[in-house]
Length: 303
Image (cartoon, rainbow, N blue to C red; front, side):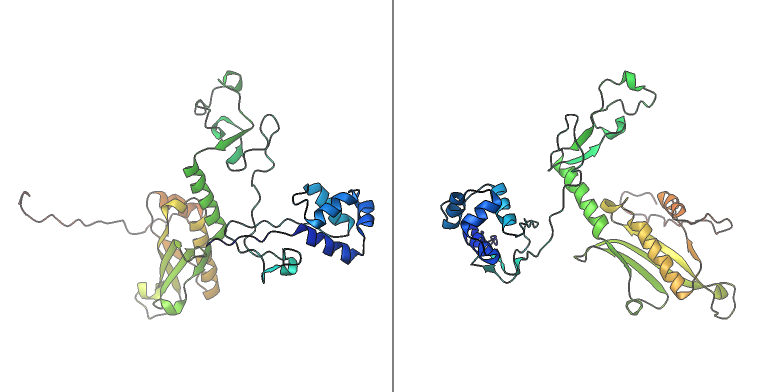
């Protein structure tokens, strides 16, 4: 069952405000510029839907403050239930997720109008910013030969792409990265996770410790290094900086325990990613090897 926002008894609220300010209807009318007859109709309930500017004038004239509290859909409204004398929530407080402002509110189209609030808008600075610029890939095409002028702003009309983009922005904003407690893993194992507030895992890093002294055949010493086993980020959340944040936490934890070196083996795009994060190619490492088991003979297979 959906919780409904309590309606405000404007007449009761205005009477309470006049009492607090010790003003008669006539005095409030003189201060606000609103006719006394209008005030009387509001307080008696005969005018249930006055103009917003009228209400604003009355509240300010009575030294009150008028505020509009907006909450995201489904957010709880009010604390302790409504105050039936004024129709407002007790404590004049609204708890819940704040309704975010339109992110592109400052953008205007060529006619100076606001962009559609439900669409995602972005400023067009060059042809590749505008989906309608089919010639965007012709980089040597001078502006005077563009088939159509560039608009000031373009919109994302696909709901599917808008939903995907907004989810990515929410993940970028809300994801938390932490190292998993040592008591949950073997002594030489490292694990760093990226999670959303609801516990959804969107990225993970694993590594393990090794000792240089053991590699050289000496007794176990204090020279510890890390070997990076892998950095994984869910496909739909790649490109948000989550992998870099996982590596940053790894480096922070290394500094805390006194480890200075971490090794990694990567291929394909993983190489470029690690290079962008400050890793360096190292010569003299073992070659990458591979073993494929031969297929056993069976029906339809050659011996």
